[in-house]
Amino acid sequence: MEYKMIFSDMDGTWLKDDYEVSQKNKQSILDAKTQGVDFILCTGRGVFGVEKFLNQLSLVGQEGYVICQNGGTVYDLRDMSLSIKHGFRTEVILPVVEIARKLGLEIYYYDDRKFMAEFETERVRKYCAVMDTKMQLLSSPTEYDGEFTKCLLTGPREKLLELRRNIQYLEEDEIDCFFSSPIFMEIVKKGVNKGRALEETAQKAGIGLSSVIAVGDGDNDIPMLRQAGMGIAVANADTHVKEVADYVTKRRCDEDAIAEVI
Image (cartoon, rainbow, N blue to C red; front, side, top):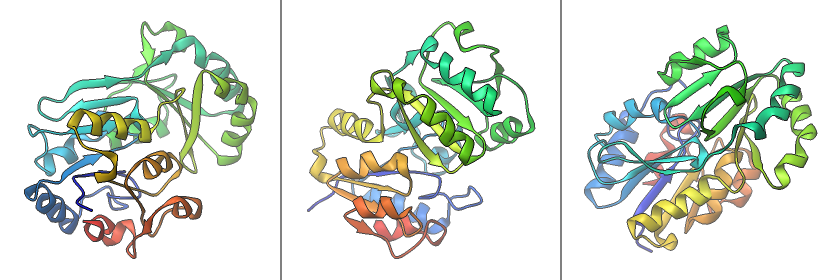
């Protein structure tokens, strides 16, 4: 099989633990591009937390796409314009916010390039530093004039699990929830995920799914691993992620797993 596109998660899959791109991974990606294979980052991050890495790989200005916010937004690399957006109504999230506040969880809101939070805490300041973004204060989601492309809740795992148990009725027809790490729970519009974004992006590029590779490590990567012609889990992936993969790398994320894939 001749593969033409590689969709890769970032954190835990492609980036080292210190949020750096290894030289070996970088060179492998550039080599793949030279051979006509597109490399597409597919992440839960907002685009503001991705652009510096796209520039390191010299991808900005080239034909291709980057998938952000777990498929909530897709950007055209040629000019970093918004190509696809899937948002949900702000009032949908109100019951989630009320329970999250009682549990002491922090909730962040996204819309395209905007990042919002209720309070400026030490945790949100660190998050903004890592993601290279500024924060806007938003005391209530309904104060926002627009739709959210993603909400992120953070705090102790047991509190997040309690929250999810209490909002299961919303998952039936309004939103989808999943974990991107033990301390991060993500909320997107119903039906939005990395697998759907992979399919939409491959279709835009005129590439069949059988010619696509997807690589990941966490819960939010499972839909794209299932959708791709070849789904690959890195060695450090969660066990249940490895179980749905067609192949598991011998190397971990911090051992240049992406270079092994390429």
